[in-house]
Amino acid sequence: SSELTQDPAVSVALGQTVRITCQGDSLRSYYANWYQQKPGQAPVLVIYGKNNRPSGIPDRFSGSSSGNTASLTITGAQAEDEADYYCNSRDSSGNHYVFGTGTKVTVL
Amino acid sequence: EVQLVESGGGLVKPGGSLRVSCAASGFTFSNAWMSWVRQAPGKGLEWVGRIKSKTDGGTTDYAAPVKGRFTISRDDSKNTLYLQMNSLKTEDTAVYYCTTTSSWYGYFDYWGQGTLVTVSS
Image (cartoon, rainbow over all chains, first blue to last red; front, side):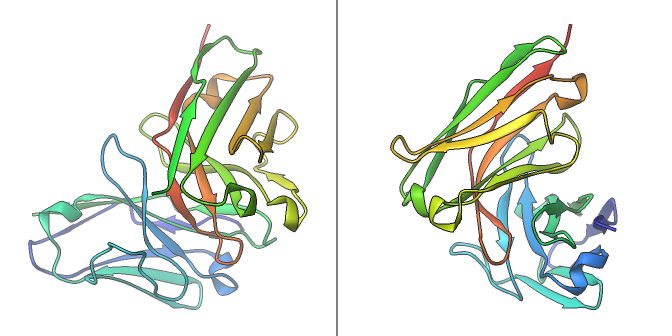
């Protein structure tokens, strides 16, 4: 299967920790990458590869992986972290790419 | 500063054609793998297709829903990426984003602001 499945929505109290998961067969072979998208804006890459943050991404964002599941953790969530989050990886063929179904994160 | 600026979106009838463009600056475009990613209104992200750099063969790959109808090309002399869309369907209605693409990890690191393509009669 080339699908990546995410929980539709999660909520987190301000300053607390939230973990967003992404499941799919391709994750056994390829790393997941993670994007944040706020309403009306283009997505922004927040984690890539094993656990790498592009320049300018706060260190409260981190990534991990085990088996067919990848996770994005926000440690000490801030109000500005409220957004949709998507994972992506290569598909099982390696020549195509697939996105997760997306998770809406609400910061309470 | 990396900039990707899409243009050419608009309203087109089912069965029609449209070409959208992406003007790139701030990086060596000819060395970059590039992709198009789309997002239907209120929906998630969907990879459309990718073109490799000419030094890596310049080959293209497409998602199943658009294969045979869409064509990605590049003009490295103009630092511009193109998406030619033929036989458009209502389900192709989306914001189309131009992105740079990691050749190794398969991530999309820089994104344009997107251009809206609406397919409707």
